[in-house]
Length: 291
Image 1 (cartoon, helix red, strand yellow):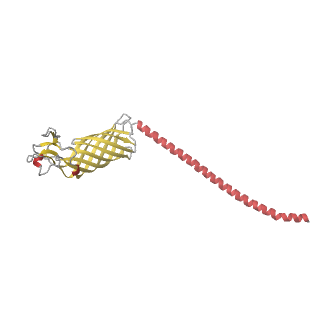
Image 2 (tube, rainbow, N blue to C red):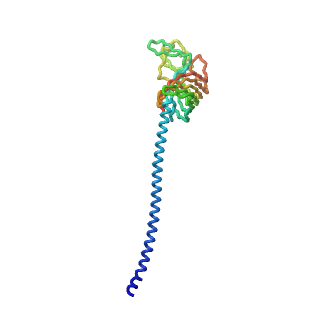
Image 3 (cartoon, one colour):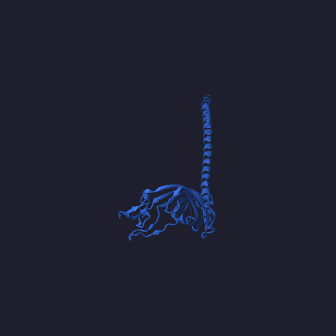
């Protein structure tokens, strides 16, 4: 009887222990399942990340190979180009800077600023009456500097075909033109006083300005503080021949025509008709870099 009572005392403890074990076994099993799924997802993300990096690296390599292939075939491929140019015009000379951003394989948007000096076709340098005097231009009353700010496009008509070929493009742009007028000064003796004067053209000094007592030009440093601005518009069209061997550098020749219209007449020479419209042809040498 004593043994039976002892066993009966242990039965509740045994049942409690079984319940405790079942509870924690279930909880530990649930935790193990959650950890398994978390590790699976992490492994998938890691694999996906590695594959993504490999894909990006492969795409970059293919892009570089394609650019190298196109460069070998003479195709102009770039995202941006920066160009400087020096131009000789039928009525003067000038230089410019151009920034280009390629939009398609053939089209590039360009932003350009030109600075030039336009001369009258009747200008002629003469020697002054003084042996030590500078040469001067008889009848010239103003220097004229057109500054143009324009936007446009470069359209590739034909690729190079190979590294040693020539790419042909049409270039066109237009925008605002600012004509800068700088007074032209000369040195001349005043016939009344004998004094040597440095003068520009005025009504009061007109007789001296065109008289026989001019001793020479006053030099390049005069008149800069007296510049006047004449606003206007311009348009330009040209053909560009890019003979550069490498895509990274620009070596080209540009031949074109430009027209400038100003809202007031531009006085450059006495005894010549002042005009609003200037049309000129030009040829330019270009050099620069591409990225």
